[in-house]
Amino acid sequence: MTSENAATASAPLLELDGARATIRLNRPKHLNRLQADDLDVLMNLFDRIEADPAIRVLVLTGTGRAFSAGYDLNSVAERAVSTVEQRSAGSAFEVVVNRLEDIGLPTICRLNGGVYGGSTDLALACDFRIGVDACEMFMPAARLGLHYYKSGIARYVARLGVDNAKRLFLTAERIGAAEMLRIGYLTAVVPAEALDEEVGRLAGILAANAPAAMRGMKQTINEFSRGKLDEEAADRRHRESMRGDEIKEGIKAFSEKRPPKF
Image (cartoon, rainbow, N blue to C red):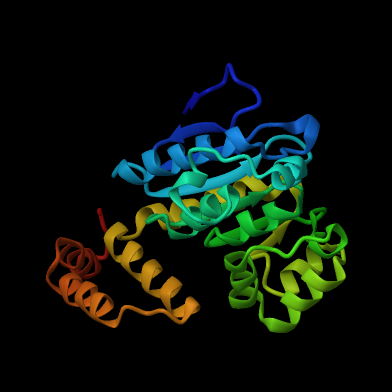
């Protein structure tokens, strides 16, 4: 395993382990609260990871007792323009979360602890969320006088349903791991000592599957969830997969009763 940016304790860390990349939020004294500069780092890491064909799965996690306390409230109020924000008319944080949702490889959020504020949407942008049984979440926008950005609300509605989105946004209620699992926020809940094993198990499954097929299906699923399916592009990806190298290897491996090698 290799790690980068280790000398800069406040910046998100990148760890590489075979086909798995892990981004670790690294402000444990402040519950991994994100600052404006962190958003540029995250965007650059997403671009780098997606461009590396050797990386098959991305894990996002935090250092210490919480996943993240969200985006720094002073930064939200001041709305200082970063290089990330210049890419979109939306807020810098929104751009980063949307980028994470659309990244081509499968993503797992390793929820090592509490998830609060904007980081609840950051985790929701991942394809899977595995949390410890002591984790909790809350979205305090209504208490802060903040109308949350529209793509974040849309993600809550698409993933959790209208009623749960209203409950979490309008009441600012704090809920625990069991309820997070019940409403579909969490994919799985495990004891803290089993977290790494369960994340590793899922990461291994995803890393072994056909990357191009997963990338295309993830895009189609995301488009369906937004009600914005590009039918022509989805049909094209399907047709191309039927002629591609991945399906040839998959069928051959199945007939030979061995794991495929993509």
